[in-house]
Image 1: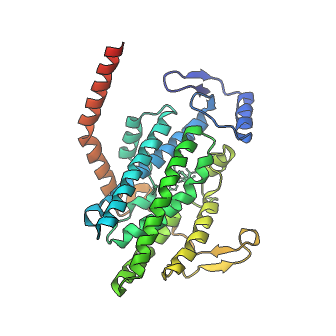
Image 2 (image 1 turned 120 degrees about the vertical axis):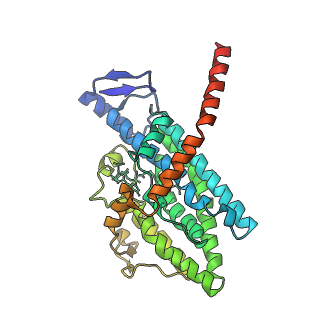
Amino acid sequence: MYSQGLIGAETETEETAEFLDAFQSRIDAEEKIEPNDPMPHAYRKTLIRMIGQHAHSEIVGMLPEGNWITRAPSLRRKVALLAKVQDEGGHGLYLYSAAETLGVSREQMTEELLSGTAKYSSIFNYPTPTWADIGAIGWLVDGAAIMNQVPLCRCSYGPYARAMIRVCKEESFHQRQGYELMKSLTEGNEDQKAMAQDALNRWWWPSLMMFGPSDTASQHSDQSMKWKIKRFTNDELRQKFVDATVPQAALIGLTMPDPDLTWNQGKNNGDGGYDFGEIDWDEFWRVVKGHGMMNKDRIKARKKAWDEGKWVRDAALAYAAKQNSKAA
Ligand code: 3HC
């Protein structure tokens, strides 16, 4: 069965082979699928999962950095961090709104996050013990997010693609301010250089894990590529990120925490690229399944915010209902 239109206006229709072929022809012709277009249930379900988890990642991602706003070493650093964390909140709102066009409610998505049914990016389950972590997050985490999000600007689902265009414009500032922060630490005293190197050592491999399991282990990639939700596979984006980031580390005098990192001129069709060591997939799945260092703290913080914000939601809904009854 496929459904058409927004939640509540759905008309259930048999998903015939003709319908599925016609839908795929629209995708192959690079047409954008819009909220009221007929779409296969599985396409809708994949997007609700991906966009919802992306939104959760943005909101949960505010926590590790928010932890340092009051402790930033200068007003300039505080303002940049404040702006970045506020941006992430906005990204979450765009993405929850994009997911709502598929017929899922924000309450439902939040309940799934708080119950552990819905995921968010594993990267946000690591602690931020030093100021250099804020630089490493901007440089590496937002750098990886850019690599993953730029292709999503060409996603076949219109609202997601459009949300990504706005998000990516802000991400480039996030990555730049993080890299500049790391550069200034490496130009500082020995302790500051050591702090930057320690942060790179702790954030490098979890940043590679952001791109998801290897292509052979990815259960959704093939279909998402066919539907042009994804434009590159997990491993292709991971490789692009490694190739772009290794020279940046060298430029600021940091050593990559991977003894197997070597230049391979044969990679990328002869353009060359880096071979790198094996990712600790046990760690990846342990964190994804909720057993990372900060998973419980992150969900506890999100639950507290959701519970304490209930009065705001109730007041806004009551006001909207009153306005609507006046207008009726
Ligand atoms: N953390 C948590 N779960 C992950 C994960 C990660 N890093 N990588 C993969 N997974 C999960 C998937 O969600 C899926 O589980 P599910 O079926 O329960 O959803 C399972 O592992 C198998 O992975 P697949 O590769 O088959 O899944 P996808 O095709 O969805 O690929 C993805 C995973 C690459 C993360 C893809 O979902 C994606 O590109 N999502 C949109 C971008 C996004 O969410 N980025 C996360 C970071 S956002 C961010 O960094 C904000 C920035 O401002 C800092």
